[in-house]
Figure 1: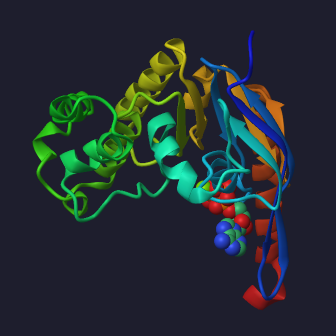
Figure 2: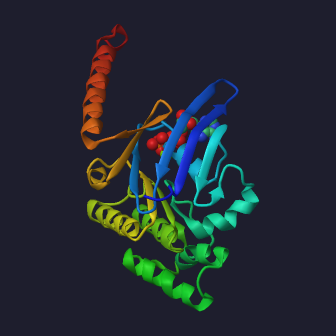
Figure 3: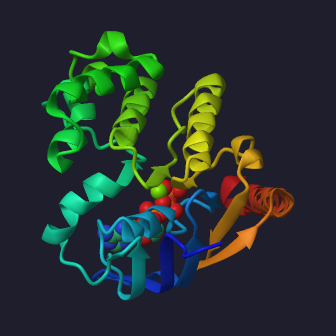
Amino acid sequence: MGEPFVQVRNLVKIYETPTRRLEVLRGVNLELYPGDFAAIVGPSGSGKSTLLNMITGIDKPTAGEVIVGDMNITATKQRHLTKWRSRNIGIAYQFFQLLPTLSVIDNVMAPMDFGNVGRKNQRRERAMQLLEFFGIQDQSYKTPDMLSGGQQQRLSIARALANNPALLIGDEPTGNLDRMSAEQVFRVFRSYAEYGTTVLIVTHDRHLVRDVPIIYALNNGILERTTVDEIEKRRTQEIKRATQEWHTVQSQEVLQ
Ligand SMILES: Nc1ncnc2c1ncn2[C@@H]1O[C@H](COP(=O)(O)OP(=O)(O)OP(=O)(O)O)[C@@H](O)[C@H]1O
Ligand SMILES: [Mg+2]
């Protein structure tokens, strides 16, 4: 099977706030190989975005190690990481993180320009192809704020793919898309994985996750391999518990 492309070892992240100490990641381990297509599920606030930010090196852990390819992410200073990241990792963010003053097409070209990837005169053409693929080519000279939420999301995915990254990270990359567009995006991710890209996405979408071969759940700071059946079982239990809590609240005198 060769070497893993992503190695996460005993990752711990603690947020210290004036009022409390929040242990978000409590010893997370993960290995992903070239061509793996993996999803992370978990309740809101469980630390999924935090974990992705540690893997991409955008944020530093309290303890533990992340290695991507031959780059020790945790041991490398931020300023040495940015160019490498733009060449090797494509990130579609939960809240898009588009560059507001650049046009749509310049947003897609930004990682190519910054990473100095491909020939200069071919970058615009490639960017346009990506926009066409995601059906937003007619938006190319607008700024991102003029786009709908779903269009911004597709733009952020197009940008993530711009440099043909070896590692593709998506933080709820289809949260704002209709079913057909979301399925299209997942098909694209799968085909990248088939060509050897390591794909790791966070998703709440119960339908789409069915087709993802490797699924992890993040609960109480621990990441564990799971299955679609286990996710459904947990969900049923959570709904039951929430319903019971609701009935308790309803029966309290305060509301009567
Ligand atoms: N900079 C920070 N300082 C303090 N607490 C933080 C910080 N960033 C995140 N948190 C807390 O860490 C926890 C995990 O946040 P995170 O954004 O990783 O959750 P998530 O699983 O991505 O949730 P969602 O599904 O809602 O996006 C939350 O309780 C959040 O409030
Ligand atoms: Mg999140």
